[in-house]
Amino acid sequence: MILRFFRRNDGRETIQRLYGAIVAHSRDPAFYTAYGVPDTIEGRFEMILVHAFLLFHRLKDESTERREFAQRVFDAFCVDMDANLREMGVGDLTVPKKMKRVAEAFYGRVSVYDAALAEPDDASLAHAVHRNVYADDGARIAEAQALALYMRRAVTALAAVPFETFAAGELPLPPATDINFKEVTPS
Image (cartoon, rainbow, N blue to C red):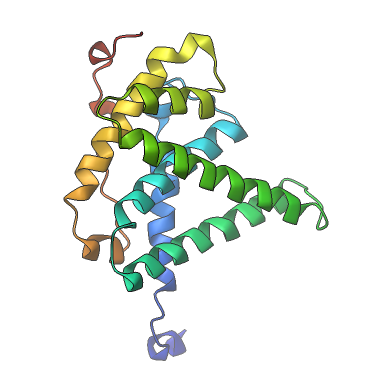
């Protein structure tokens, strides 16, 4: 125990704290109740992807050194996904194939969400959220629009957060309950 005070701080604890914040935000019960995100393995995975995306979207224009910080958070995500697959009983020979699909899903979401956020309205983002998070469930269009609005507000809020806050292991996001569903009009 005493030796831990003499260890060089390599930032692992901060990375784990920041990744833990991503997971904690993704587990907010409001997403599974008010927003109607399916409370399934897939639904929870999608919410982790949404919150990881929000952090990485914020950090993408930082310096190379700071983007390396984001890479370390992504690495923590991969380690966690690998461990979860093994815990669910996925065999050692199958884990790499599943991890490839996890990475493809992540990069696919990043590409689609980034492009949708570049649009002036939320229609593209709501469509992407509807397709990915809700698996095109026609009954969940309003919820997809509300989640897109949450994401847009989170991006705006994170833009004002200094990098040092993330480097301290914090991910200050607006509460999921801040969305007034009356603002959302199904199209």
